[in-house]
Image 1: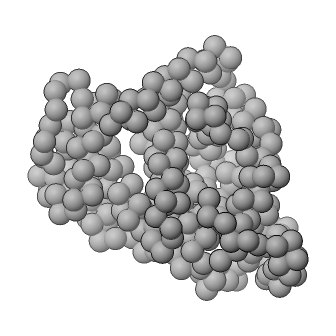
Image 2 (image 1 turned 45 degrees about the vertical axis):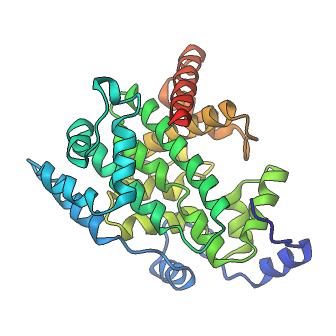
Length: 308
């Protein structure tokens, strides 16, 4: 994590000067939203993503059209081929063309590749090493979340994958906008503080709020924005359905468990407290044996991905 040398005195000054959003309501007012939009640059959705989503949502998507969209972007093509030839999909032998990759992956997985590649390309203006580390961790979590979703009734694996990609996607936006944000990340990690709480203390917006606006800007399903908005909320599992629908909470829960498993497998420090993880286990009905099985499967998938 790049260091910015932020002092405690500077943090205190930032805390005093930062304009705050309404703290008493979980429903952001139009004024709150306007304040966030004026404070931070939220990327617009690339045209190719919109084209791919429009095609993919048809009753009978044109696979040649999707392959053509992917072929126009070398990074997207490489990502599609890598996934199609991975242990998750590559049991029938390697493929070497975007068209064959689309056939093997299917429309939903192709859209995940398109969105992931475009999101990665939108992360600019930051140290390359930091971006690489952040994105590698993000992709690992997305993989783990989709694997866990597949064993949960009623939870879409591709929705879990996309949610995991975007739920922390505003962190690079915050870092790019605020020179002292990297030091706040370090402080939270060292002192095991909840990042969103610290953000609200020192900055005029938080990454869950910015992330929810990002997915709205990209025309992604509203359920993803709802889940992102509340994924750090300590009362998320007790909120009424009108505030946080069960389908959105399912995405949060799957990713809370996936984050814990990935951190254990990669021997990372666990950020914040463990309460949300425990609530997620209860919500999903996962036993200790279930968790051991998923830990083993996720570890194998991470190892396979590392081998390329």
